Length: 203
Image (tube, rainbow, N blue to C red; front, side, top):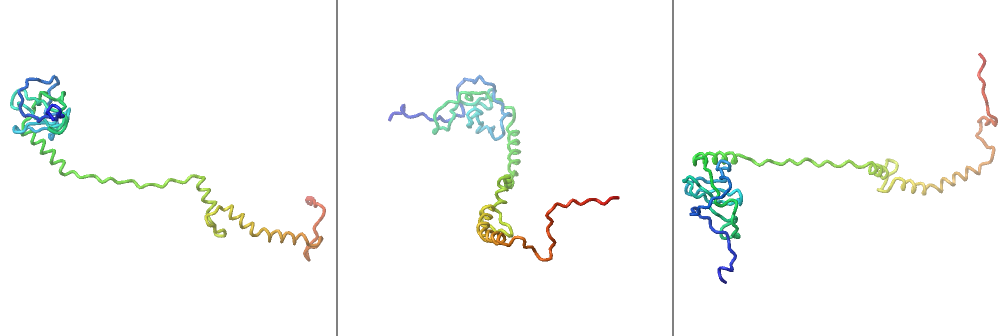
């Protein structure tokens, strides 16, 4: 298979380039970046491109017009060869010394070392209040001291109890109806047959 048919991958980033092309965008100011997003050591001067979020060498750091070298957006040799149009050949304004950058980097590390992860306190789950209809249904099925229940509705238990005693109640009513007319308990006064209208005494 010829090399022309192979899919091109991202090219390695060169620390120096002879290209005189300059990006028309405003210069990238070093102080606007975070300390961990830039490396001002002369041996490996580089920064994270704000557009493609990859590390890119800074060409001509000791000159008057340092700039970001042309680069692709992916990892060299792995991702597809897509040129970063917005960040390539962009001028860089170095407005701090290497010592100042190292101090900012060390201060940031000292702050993050002593950080502790916070423990998330979960709020206890509160049970929802039952609806009025649910409370009424619970009262109907709840057993009482004289009416023990087994989960069935209270009205059903009462119907079953009445069915078990209905025969005895009707027999008692029948026997009461068979008493002779006019019988009354001994020693009791006669029941008046006319309506009494008492009068108040005259004053």
